[in-house]
Image: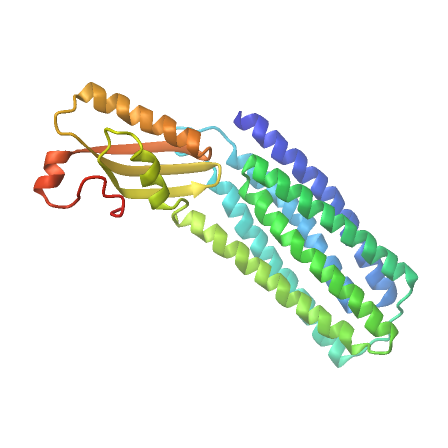
Length: 303
């Protein structure tokens, strides 16, 4: 199952790499011909996307390696680490774009906007729209952190390319300074995309909660023998969620029944929340909890 999923993600990445490289090379060529800073900046942005996907293939390969003695929880965080590397590349790209924009301000160039410029930009916009739609759809189907974050980033490419189109029109109408201004705006958008990826990536690496505790408590407490559910914790990525929590049951429940109940809870959660892969349940006897005055019957508010 894991091997098949890896191959599906890899297939998506290869298609996206080819499309991103086609878009970036087209923009860089036209940017060099027309001397447009905004088109060149957008070209570097798209080139970064292609490189990101190449790095992503490597990261996803390691992420789907089987569990071993040294890594009993698997290797899925390699995928998240890859997204952080992508964020770093985006920051470097934005610095490059800002530097070029500054040089344009100091040493202005004469721009040559022609019909080919518009054709190339329309072509690349259509590519980006296809990539973000396709990658987001596959990311949700496969529950891939990398594909979903990359699709979100590619969506920003669409708006950036549209802004470049507006820039070309402005230059054609006699406002060449708009080209430099838009390249600066693009660099800021690249930085924002980088920090969005950093934020989501660090959440995973720092084991931020993935699921709402109240929803878990509600599902678990559907079983009549469970009085309450508390100390609920979740971590991981969308398709590899680890859960642990305490349940309160009647004090005279046999060990055999408590054991089977834990398995019922695990199966129920995996059915209701497909991304759950590991469930660790601690069983508390009701009399012990009542004596310690910590929780009340079906107390789903205390986690």
